[in-house]
Amino acid sequence: MTSPSLREDVFNYVRERYKSDIEYLWRRYPNYAVFRHKDNMKWYGLVMDIPRFKLGLKGTEPVDILNVKTDSPQLADILRQRKGCFASFHTAGPRWVSVILDGTVTIGEIYGLIDMSYEETASAAEKAAMRPPKEWIIPSNPKYYDSVHAFDHRDVIEWKQGKGIRKGDTVYMYIGAPVSAILYKCVVTETDIPYYFQRGELTITALMRIRLEKRYDPDLFPFDRLKNEFDIFAVRGPRGIPQSLSKALND
Image 1 (cartoon, rainbow, N blue to C red):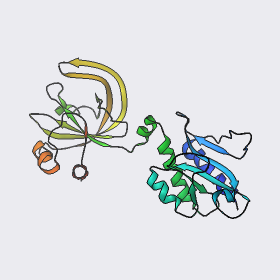
Image 2: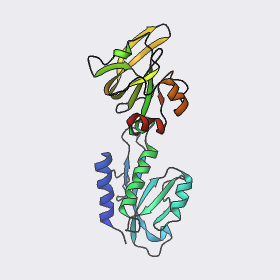
Image 3: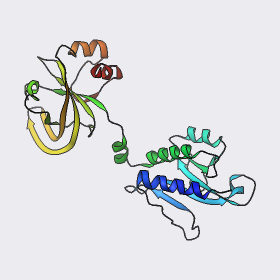
Image 4: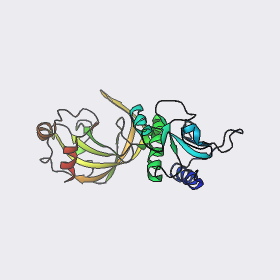
């Protein structure tokens, strides 16, 4: 039998977590409810009440189902083998599945599938915003800026924004020759600050604001150690760091 409480649990979840509206789009099907992204308007969930026999189950009484999108056709195939999950009803595509809302699938699992569907249907901009904080090495050329003394008198400075760096990320500032070492750990507090500067090969089109978190002695992470222990052979632009280096920097 159907479970109105699970339908409401799903609706409350998407309202609270994703600030989504519950939309009823079809006069012919007044109980069909859609929730979708506000920017690209793509659906990430559709709740319907359909007769049980349309899922290959016994009986004609209505049951609620939830359509969600998985991250791969392979996962969708695996889910369809599980009790309570079916080939997608009404929503086309190999990555969509229907989940029955009658208690067969736990509400925790249903929430996880909603989260996956939300991420898979999000716009590129929203996906980028949802990514977890990242760690970077950023270079500094002393011939352009006295970065050795950048934090002598304040803990927050503005710096050239590297591609892909976002608010909340951590940046480790590598000072070029003659220092040739990582000297600072900073957290990014603001990005996309308008700015334009050009001198020789250096062009800056935006700044980020970074706050000093930790200082390193030049002997701790010199270039030779970065190369020999962590396989970092050049720091010419912002780059991610291996887990082993992250651990060493944060010990």
